[in-house]
Amino acid sequence: MKRFNFALNYSTMIETDILIIGAGPCGLFTVFEAGLLKLKCHLIDALPLAGGQLTEIYPKKPIYDIPGFPEVMAGDLIDELMKQAAPFKPGFTLGERAETIEKTDDDHFILTTNRGTKHKAPVIMIAGGLGCFEPRKPPISNLSEFEDKGVEYIIKDPKIYKDKKVVISGGGDSALDWAIYLADDLAKEVSLVHRRQSFRGHPDSVQKVIDMSNDGRINLLTDSEVIGVNGNDSLQSLTIKAKVEGEIIKEADHWVPLFGLTPKLGPLADWGLNLEKNAIEVDTVDYSTNVPGIYAIGDINTYAGKLKLILCGFHEGTIAVQSAFKRIYPDKNLVLKYTTVNGVQGF
Ligand SMILES: Cc1cc2nc3c(=O)[nH]c(=O)nc-3n(C[C@H](O)[C@H](O)[C@H](O)COP(=O)(O)OP(=O)(O)OC[C@H]3O[C@@H](n4cnc5c(N)ncnc54)[C@H](O)[C@@H]3O)c2cc1C
Image (cartoon, rainbow, N blue to C red; front, side):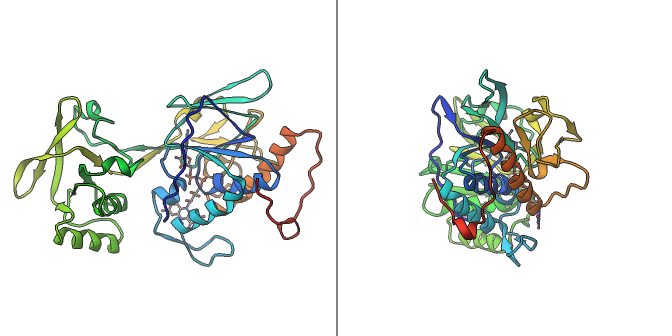
């Protein structure tokens, strides 16, 4: 899957027509449907890359139930959705969690992220999937002292690892893929530490790591575990317990434990929305919530007969933007126009 580069916007206030929380497949397709109605969108996602579960959990798995695609790799579907949304120039705030909302006198929402970025819009579309993914942290007592001082749970900007000594832990696709990526002429030294002999990731990636280890480009430590983090102001070394060698100290500028992510509804649970078992209740007429101006689409919503499928989320986003348009422009008439007739008129 391609890695798209976006300029993250840290200006004081980002204004748009529809603020979409969650840049998963449903949020991305909503940008396109909103664009056809000349509504501009800005997406916020806690993860550093767009794509939601497809990018984070199963980028290399084929999907078979997207209409018109008998088989499509999850990562490729996200690339195509990004291309489809591109004419409507969506804005992105990535790597930040939507945290609080407040209402203004002119019936808009101000949404603030955990990093203080503020966004203003008359409509919020929650496409938050299973909620925010929180990293699984290894049980090391002083770990928090080194967070963002050498210990990172998500790779947001690979450039920070240039010419550095990096240790990655984990046995899944993320750990394998990042070890390969960073060892390919970026980091000074890459070590991959895994508790077992065998890896859970894609066989091609496992083979590539073994080949790179044989070439001396990745330092592969299996049957091993990081048990301590050491340093003064920032990370300097790791204590690794290896089955054969015993305890060793490894110099490291960065440690990236990639032990997976667990989803949590997180701050959205405090926004006064009607919830049922961690999902947001919606009216199936337009997928609106009980808070006027806030809609919920995709995996995060619930209603009688709900199916957590991508194609259902595409439908929900399409219907919801029609309702959002009427809310933003109550006096304008909305006529459905086929794309075959009108084409796609980008911004
Ligand atoms: C292994 C696997 C296989 C699957 N196979 C299929 C399949 O074959 N066909 C199919 O139709 N579906 C499949 N699914 C389900 C499909 O992935 C989901 O239905 C789909 O991802 C839902 O899309 P979404 O846009 O609603 O949410 P998601 O893809 O979950 O994206 C939601 C995004 O919102 C972000 N977010 C949440 N809360 C916040 C917040 N407060 N602030 C900022 N960001 C936030 C998250 O970080 C996430 O990136 C599969 C799922 C899995 C796990």
